[in-house]
Image (tube, rainbow, N blue to C red; front, side, top):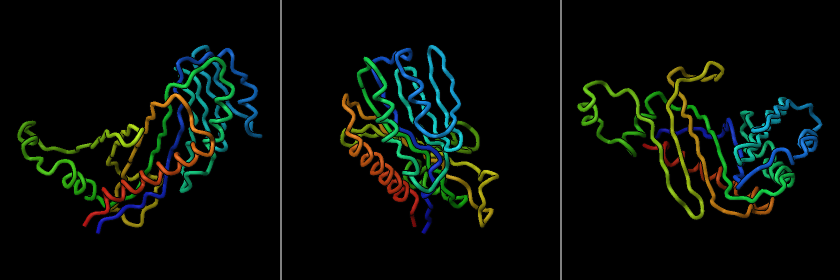
Length: 219
């Protein structure tokens, strides 16, 4: 049985899409005072970015989007309450109407060196020979990307095979990395209440992990 450990998440964010965002109307001081940490601020007419380095939290406003991203690798999806931070930030927007919202998750998992090709052959590319003949060369890689709809969400999943990074300690050198990115888009003009947003954010992450296990835990 081939298996993977999906407990490590490298990045997660919650993004809100608006009809318009007037950066000049935002009280930047309130954003800077969200935490008792001195932030790094980049403030231009087109983009406002506030970074809290010690906790690797990034708040971005611009291009009609409010994006709150936790960039610190962790085994805890709820290491920071992004739903609460988003709820606070969105209340500072004046004259903006919500068009959609979404979640992003990046999971990095160790896997056996031949596991990715085995999974690709089973689920996505059972016979590479015709394409090999077409390109008249050796096929070195295939990166699956799945787009599907479930309920009110539109899902975009990208799976990437990568060599182990230097800072990742593996017991066996025969292991590589699976980098899995999932974007979920909800074309909803009302954001769930904070409790509902938290529940959805955590549930979608659990479903993401389950999907990866179903894809990669094969005999």
